[in-house]
Length: 277
Length: 278
Image (cartoon, rainbow over all chains, first blue to last red; front, side, top):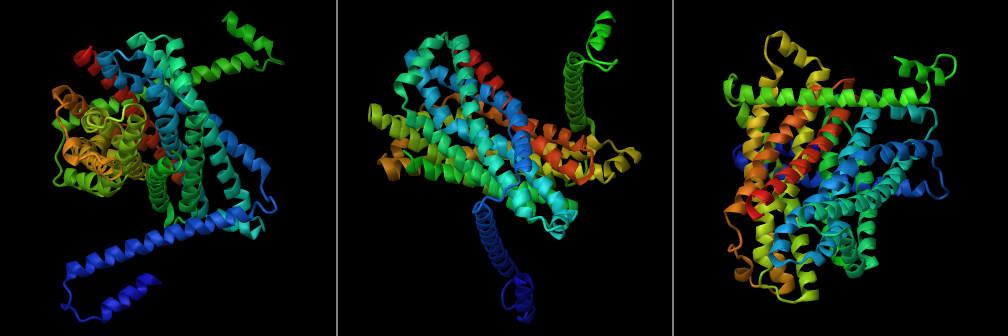
């Protein structure tokens, strides 16, 4: 609709009045602004639809259970692997400074602070968005392209409460649980590697965490993981449902959903870092 | 043989028992992984071979450069700007809590950015964007039988599809990550200036960056740039099962390229620690 209006206007104009390049640039800016507004609006409308299904609760519990297993349990190995290496990298990066100032007592505090507050939630959310969010977009997109969603509707099954709400709940719950688990694994990886490279005792390492960190540091990371889960769930469901144009459209939607989740994660992390300090 | 028979007998009516099924599952998983590792290695070697000896198509590398580099520029700039702000905000608040001396924040931050953070965080962003793109492109060519058509024309798919992306990615990842270093430093400097009153001239202190940091950082850029197209190209070439398969291939590409960058980061950081600092 908007595009055809723009084309009409452009066609009515006399050629040569505005230079081609400038016209094209303005049109491109306008189109991307309209696109972003459309996406934001679509995501908010989807959120509204999802929230309405909770009053009274209208959720397919079998689908919910299946999604929890698929999103959570089957992501455990990759999350554990990533977390071990993230913890180890933290200690490797710190070790040059630690050896310089021989500040072995602070390694636990430093690694714990960074992992619990920032790196753990962000990296686990990025992996989760790559594994679960992208797959979710592809699955929903394929369903849209093969008209399975219309099929559900024609059977009087509400696609939102049957497909979207279980995925939405599953992603938020499981990202939270996986972040708790991943934080633990990352701290153990850091402790293990601290002992191997710097010779820091486990006791000293965990003493640094328990003495110098407050419970709030843990809670901040967990609140962040809830918000990241919300962002990943909304963007992956929205882009999945908004697929147009057959199989290539599914590929584009997956790409758009992963990119939108990553930008959303970092931008919201920036604001939460301020608000939750 | 006798062990196998015992395990079979443990089940009922000649059906394999749970132990046999478990063992079979583990064995199948191990075989799958070994096969995947061999294929990945073979694609890597073939990519290197055809990078030197392959045919040269005019403009293919440039087109891939544009797709990988220019089109990721805005995304990478936005994300790395926010990462820089978050990092400086955290370090300044923590230092204010302990010593309150913000003189060396800039120097240490720039050293860390050059040595690790620009490359590691930036390459994960590129892995999601570039890796997903490569796997989706090659995967949809595989499910529509275009890759088989290439093979029928005696054109090696690795030479045709992966090599241009490989060359482009090595160049553009390095360029983009150096740009990311710059963006992170500027955004960090502005945060320190605006929120903690650190003078930009004091913040922009390059005295702690030496050859060792630069070498580590640039090695990471090159390694990540090489790993992303190989891993996602492998995921794309092994696509099966129609449109849904392309979705799965994209997912695997994102996850395994991210994991590859983390693993390589760990290996390079540890090596650098022992070579330069130990």
